[in-house]
Amino acid sequence: MRNLFIFWIVSGWLAVQGMATSAPPALAPVVPGKILEFPDDFGAHNDFRIEWWYVTGWLETPAGKPLGFQITFFRTATRADRDNPSHFSPQQLIIAHVALSDPAIGRLQHDQKIARAGFDLAYARTGNTDVKLDDWSFVREADGHYRTHIRAENFTLDFTLTPAQPLMQQGENGFSRKGPEPEQASYYYSEPHLQITGTIRRQGEDMPVTGTAWLDHEWSSALLDANAQGWDWIGASLADGAALMAFQIRGKDGSKIRAHAALRDAAGHIQTFTPDQVSFHPIRTWHSARTQADYPVATRVRTGKIEWLITPLMDDQELDARTSAGAVYWEGAVTLTRDGEPAGHGYMELTGYVQPLSM
Image (tube, rainbow, N blue to C red; front, side):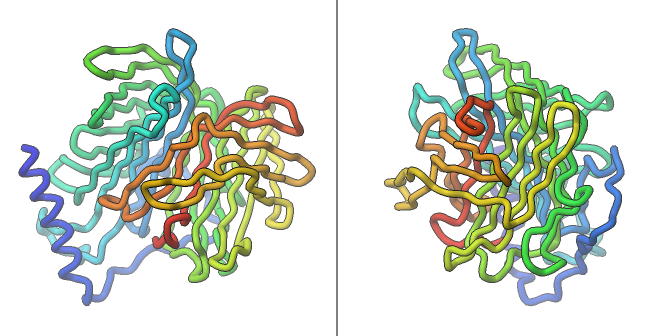
């Protein structure tokens, strides 16, 4: 079965590369004013170029020790003819990453997979969240809670994630600008404060865990601005029930191409911050001996008059995904203080520090 699966992946990639000179099918644009509709928008949007379901969170073991985790499923449209009736036509690719941050190990444990969609081995279904890649899955049930099963190389995750708050639509009612041009945008919503119960299996033993997670679901057909190097992003479920999302897109010359932040308090009131109100200020870097990248793992982030201090659970949370998504990035569990006071936990993503991120 494993050899068949590898052959299926490779043949899909060869088919995609073989069609590189053909005219790509039309992709749906992201436009302002669209009203996101649920449950349909929980599911896949196959007419858009790229889409992801991104879950990050903090866990606690029975001994009270903290762990971080990441589960990501990507769907990307290929150049294949959408009218081709063949089940072997690689119209969509499914990519998945998983990672576990354990300070006792001191480095990120991670795994990755890629395959073309088809034959019920890999898919991202429409109508509700239901994504699968081999024996990895992430599914939203009718009552709103999520189930995920991931059997990675060094561990297995079995989690139930239950919403505790309403959806948080990012940007302008889910329309999130990512660059200076109007078309450089995505549809984007988050689910902060997901409550986790489940188990982690390592070295033949099951360990129960509880925790809190953040889910991002985002889809777009736009490429990054030609001058973009990468982005820095933070999502945090804060201790007082608030939720913070902030990002900046960095230019190759070190400039800030775009930035945005949103802070929702426990009562549901949202304060948004314009690009000139959002800034990232590195205060400490970590050097990767594997890739020679220097990541700003400790950072001050300003959103208006609020100052957040971001501190990593551990420094080495670099994920090398060059055999699937073609990129290396830092994705790590972090703690936050707000104006010098402990504020909660979250995750930070740092891309484009090895080479410019290409999407």
